[in-house]
Structure formats: structure tokens, C-alpha cells
Length: 156
Image 1 (cartoon, one colour):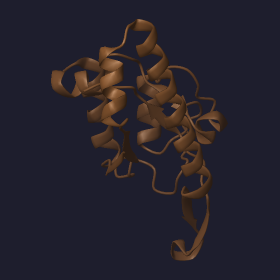
Image 2 (cartoon, one colour):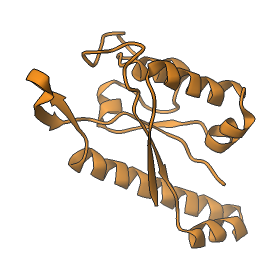
Image 3 (cartoon, rainbow, N blue to C red):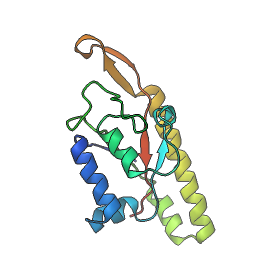
């Protein structure tokens, strides 16, 4: 199952990440980042030179619409009011969650890796078929967009 929630502006995204990184809100931190560090996925992340673990500074720059390496604006209205993105939650079917919960370490690792591959495939599909940006006068023109995704594995 896929759930999508619009994230707020850059300031809200920064506060959201701070909760994850500092543990100010244990419930949110446990839900999102207890088990793993985030990882970068998507052509946009590749173009920007983002790979491996998600680092706070990189996340913050992108949340405000700036290139994390150069500081250059990536969007016309970069800054505090820039919409930071969306929170997509990919949930495995309950039967998979039960198999993971009852499995030994090796089984859990295989299930987690399979879920990671499924999430990566879904994001790749979305990037090719559903990601676009508006350009031109009054945003009337559309063009395909490259995604920069900070992916976190979490368990409930």
C-alpha cells in the first residue's frame, strides 16, 4: 500500500528532520529513523551528486530548494516558503510483515532487501511516469522531473 502526505515548506521540513536527527520527539524518531539511516534514491539525487546516507545539511538544502553542493537555487521560489516535497509510505502486505516478524535474522534481511527493491522500483516508475514540473508562463508547460528521494526503512 502507498500513502502520500504533502510535506510543508522548507522550515517545516527542517523541523521535521531535526525531530528525526535529535530525538526531540521519540515517537517520530522511532517511527522513521530508529533502525536505519536514510539513503538517497532517484535521478535527481544522482544529478546532484547525492548518494549513500542522508546527511542533515543535504536534506536541509533540498528542503529549501537549493543544491546541497553549490547552494544555487534549484527552483524559482527557493527559500523558507518552498514546498519541500511529499512523504510517501510504502507498506508491505500484513502477511509479509508477519513473515518478517516470525523470521530469523536471515529471513528478515531477505524480506527487508526485497521490500527495498520494491520501493526502488516503485519510485523509478513514478519518476518515469508521474513526476513532472511546471515551466513557462503561469506554469502552463510541463516537463518530466527527476526525483531526489531520502528513503528511510521503518517498522511498526
